[in-house]
Structures are given as C-alpha cells and as structure tokens.
Length: 114
Image (cartoon, rainbow, N blue to C red; front, side, top):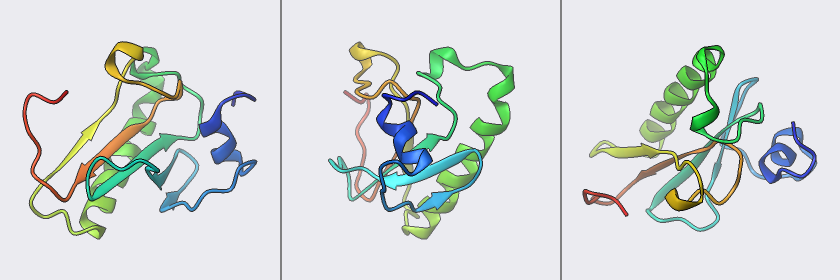
C-alpha cells in the first residue's frame, strides 16, 4: 500500500466507497465518470503502478481480475459483449497511478478505441 494513493485508501477502507466485489486480491467499484452504461473499475488490493510493472508473481491477481470481470458483466446483463481495458501511463490516459481495469459495456463499442 502507498499512503498517498487514492485506490490504496479505498482498499484499506480509509476512504469508504460502495464496493461491488471485494476479496483478498481485488475489489470493484463503479466509475464516478462512466463512459458507458456499465463502467466498473477492477482494482488490485496490492499497489501496482500499471501493467508495465506486472510480473509472474501477479498471475493469480490477474486471473482473479478476469474472473471477477466476467461475473460482474454477467450480473449487469452484458450479454451482447463488453470490453476490459487498462491504461499504462499518461499518454494512454492513466489518471491514477495504481493498476486498474475498466469493464465497459451496455453500448456498442468502436474500434480502434481512443
């Protein structure tokens, strides 16, 4: 955990937020600035800056994020499809320096994104 990290404060409960899911590896919250009808953030409990900092030791956490994303997408009725994306660095739009994935759905997505 990092003392000045917003997502770490959510994880520890220092800042209370409504969580859709929480376990020892990952928690999920709704994005406060949704870009789709469903916009959920999946955030590892452990502080990792971005996907660029991931290693073999993070395999269980990444698997858990994928599993929780699938479960939340099903619970939100995203039968037509959904997108799971992470941003790495400022040029990609990463606004919080704590790894997180965006689960987006409920509307048609275009390609390429951005």
